[in-house]
Length: 134
Image (cartoon, rainbow, N blue to C red; front, side, top):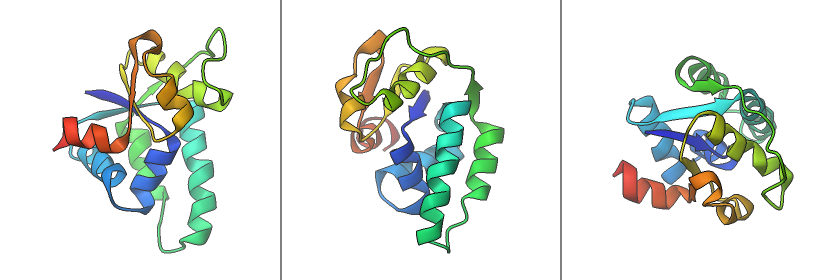
């Protein structure tokens, strides 16, 4: 199963426990496939570096290196029009379209409201874990 992870889910999975961590573990165990665009990968790195300053015991580099090797990297084009209230969230929809992925995992209310766009379902980390991982 291919999925796109919103930045908040990816970063939470790296730095904390709970459903986001379980999703990353399922990916590391080859139960699911992450799909990312270059824009999303850069955002993961940027946000992760900021959080690394607050949590110096967490090394983001190994998971980013693994992401570069294991995730499916797609070239996502901009959407023809803004879909989410926060236009930065459109990159996740664009990535899902480019990767022919029908599922985005996010806790972001703007992305959750965009569920259904191009038949892409946007679900919370808890719902994904409950329905697909456990």
